[in-house]
Length: 86
Image (cartoon, rainbow, N blue to C red; front, side):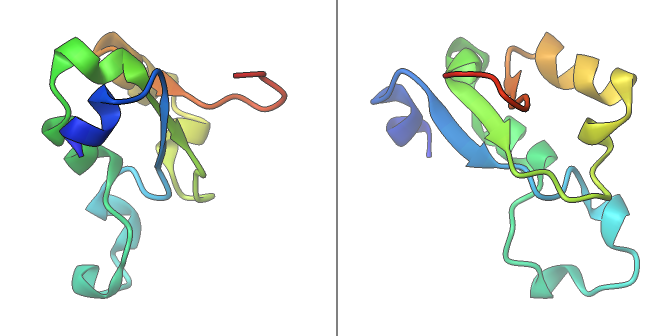
């Protein structure tokens, strides 16, 4: 994924679930989405600003938890915002 991100000015990546904590009721192996926390570990800081996370599930704390949002942004990643033009 690093190579793909490097090739583009901005990459929109799935952020359906922030972490496994949101899925206590399901088997993690049955979920086809990578967690935001996993994706952030795969992307080096040097290219983090080229990643914008999109598509947040209603359980994702990135929708409502300022501390979690700040943590992601502090690492250089972008978060999609409604009505924002990219």
